[in-house]
Length: 198
Image 1 (cartoon, rainbow, N blue to C red):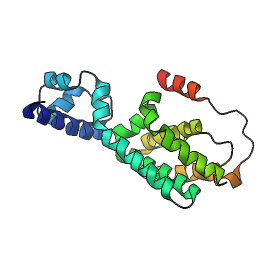
Image 2: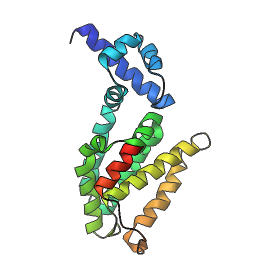
Image 3: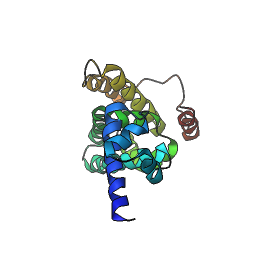
């Protein structure tokens, strides 16, 4: 890629991060091009689809989540590792409107990179007896969706009340608080179908 083309790409990714964080993923892409100081044609030349631009804008977040997961797995107490991971990912969501929207609507393909890591975090906490035995990786979607919606609903009132909501959820996920659940967990295929329909 020519140097000027590479600079345009970098400007577009930086602008997209900023605009998505401020205004969400549905913002008109003209706003991204304007912030980057390029034409809309240049934007589409570099990123033919909105999805490609979103993936480029949030690539650092994906790497950050992977690092958080590795750190969580390195903590001595598996329950503490699980809590650390969920809290830190929720913090990323709360700090960035675009990432929060992405977390609530990511496709199974977008999530596949972190699937193994999350599987290990969940399995480790469950096997150690901290996390309720009937909690599945697919149940993580409900935790994410719940926090996503809390962040959205309370953004104009409180930027931290999601922490209270998450603490209530985490208390309910402790093995010591477990009661039989009325419904079985969703399968991975069912969860993928839900994401496809969102």
